[in-house]
Length: 178
Image (cartoon, rainbow, N blue to C red; front, side, top):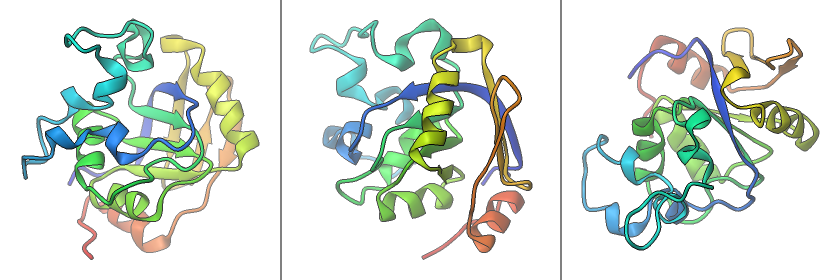
């Protein structure tokens, strides 16, 4: 697993609440046991129309967010079934950090197992980051796992909590089992 220490990148705003794992990676793409190749189908039903054409209004299809490495999301992200394919698709797309007011427990733990840092922040702070992310590709957010901080493009710093063992595993790039 790739080490996670500091990440500076474009943050994509996805203010939807209750984004479930079927929205993240629909069931028809669960036939593989490989962790790669799923990124193209990330948010498939939101990203593409019935003919497979990109929906230009979906955030990750917009030019300024195609290289997003951080996702700022709504409450209860990753709810639904326990499919580990959801974090596989997110990681394969290139997103290394998701920031939301809350996550479904199984999804939250699966993120750590797959090298993704899920950060829980109060709604008011997520709103600040959402607004910052709406600035597009010129706004870069920095996540520093060692310091446990998120810094906005304007230099405002927010702190977050993370389990010490999970933090250690991400910093070392070692796998969390169980």
